Amino acid sequence: GAVVSQHPSRVICKSGTSVKIECRSLDFQATTMFWYRQFPKQSLMLMATSNEGSKATYEQGVEKDKFLINHASLTLSTLTVTSAHPEDSSFYICSAFSGVADTQYFGPGTRLTVL
Amino acid sequence: EDQVTQSPEALRLQEGESSSLNCSYTVSGLRGLFWYRQDPGKGPEFLFTLYSAGEEKEKERLKATLTKKESFLHITAPKPEDSATYLCAVQASGGYQKVTFGTGTKLQVIP
Image (cartoon, rainbow over all chains, first blue to last red):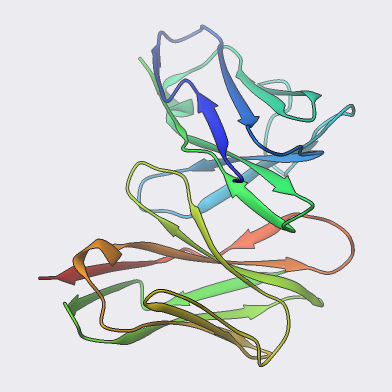
């Protein structure tokens, strides 16, 4: 149990385009999901907290207009990187909080490369 | 501000050579401390949650312990498949589910 999926696993796009990443909790409902960014050989940096049915809470320094988050249902959150630039290239990982297990479960991550 | 420091940054062990990873933390009221394993290019995989000092949890060759200031992840007789980065994270009390991660310990187990 406690499986979290992400799609796509890898995406390459041109500078200036927008990219949407989906995060799904497959076997549990998650009122709260989190989006992280991870640079090579570094730990996870929390970007934002996504709450079902309400606006996301962004960490300091994260541009909310650039990283659009939507948590439309108890099993789905999306992150849209708008007008992507090469510096947005990174590994993006989502997690979903299971109230039953009182634990965050992570997705497999999405590798974004912006050319 | 919550802080998590993990040591060592990297650890190289011979297969069967037991050791421990350290996670020191400061948090304004600990709600939970988490251990995750992360393989290259993948998301973290949940291992343990510890809630109070003195608590211990085990899974196969791994045992996690918790004191008021730090946690240890003991690896007994490791195998090459235990090679990964081990992440520690803390969650503060107060009803907010956000966690703060350490930078991890990269473990390499050599056959």
